Length: 552
Image (cartoon, rainbow, N blue to C red; front, side):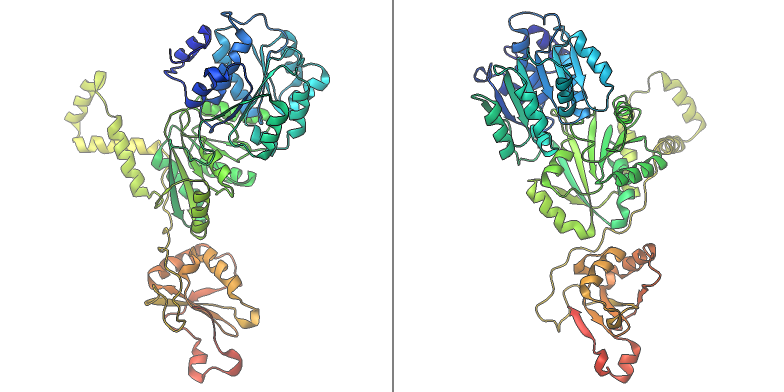
């Protein structure tokens, strides 16, 4: 039997859902040593932990009976950090306990509280809710904790990070002391361990994976792009990988609004999730993703906590996170429950080194690659079209008539054209940037490696305008889509500054300058092979205008 010691009704529900064998965390909560004990569990997102704690508390709720009794005061309470996760947990427990006659009630912020009060009054076996709303019901007297046999804290580390410690302590203090307490957390920092020591007794410790271990079912890709190409890189990444569903992460609400509008304008079926949306709007967006009316979700980190979408095969980090745990949390939306997923990080040139450090801190190995071009996307379209062609079936006679009327190559071209017109068009990207070069040579009098053949540019500001390399370098990298290593010598004069760029990168640099020409007071233009102003070369450098080699 793949699920030992599981009530028959739950075993049937698992079989109907296609569960051939338990995941590691599900198997761990069913071992004899875990039966009837408090549990302290660390498991990765997407590991099947909702079903795991559903199975763990089943014995407390059903016992030796075949079905649950009449619903009255709740026997189990599940606390989750966000509305979306709480509603998702309720859906999972609903199908798991449906055959056993289980009734699940939800209590989450942003929903109509009177409806929740009526549901609690009618009786429920399991209540799932967010900390603030559950505390509200306890204080109102509409949630009776006296019959609770088990309390589950799901994603406990997230709840503490979001500031719910006081709510959790009030909830736990109101429950019977003999209850089981099951604490599930991706990581176990000191605050979690302190909470466990206070509210658990002889807890059985379960760790199904190293907290720093990268998700093995996710293929990480890092794409080096121009800073101005983020939006079109998102478009091309979505088109290249063509996942059943995709999630695009932005750092701010404004970033979500901008990316969502850009994708909708280009023809993607996309929805947005951010903290500024009402609960009804968020529910509508999630439902559109679940019933396949939308295929792309653009979200902030907070809005996407705990979301599990069907067929989510692609995660795109349009804006990079600052924290390795956030990287893993975002990425963990895909590659769940044994399914494979792809995670793409869009990395602007100046952030390559920072991204490498982030990946190391998250214990993630990513394959660096160029962003998909329009040609590569069209090739993928052709390959997918070939894969989709099966037996002709009832259309065989019509196909013969078409072949008699038109050459086969014309029919194939029309079919490919029809497929492409149904999809958003790929975009043309800027160059992915010059290759990273070694640092400057030790002798400032020698040309740096990579600058043996270079072009000089001039900027119409110099010493009189307080030009300083500490300001100039980031400015040039931002305007021209270069890295610091791609800028050679900088020479600052009284009224202008000249700097060196490898000839191989000069054309792309000039094109990027034209695209980003938003500052009319600052003019950057080619200066050919001249490292000094014409006047200085003809008359000799006056005492106050000696060039300063700011960087070699």
